[in-house]
Amino acid sequence: MDLSQRLVAFVREQRVITYKQYYIDRFERGPNRWIARITRVDGRNVRVIAPASEHQFLETKPTSSPEEAESLAKQGIDFGGMV
Image 1 (tube, rainbow, N blue to C red):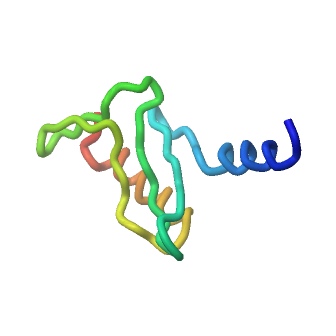
Image 2: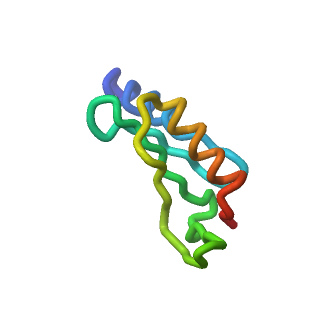
Image 3: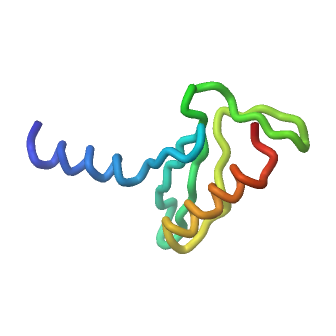
């Protein structure tokens, strides 16, 4: 693995975190428009209680920093009715 491949792997590792039974993937969608994508660790769909629905993933609204996007994702997991 050359240096550029290691750098890409390192950045990817730093971008995705595991929180409870979910992955939170933070990425920039335009200048200063950070979002977090929430998926389940086990690969199943994310279920939402109200309105009752299932999704392959959920995304936060755009924020100005990756930390803010991560915080929104954690709030959604903790208080957003995801199961």
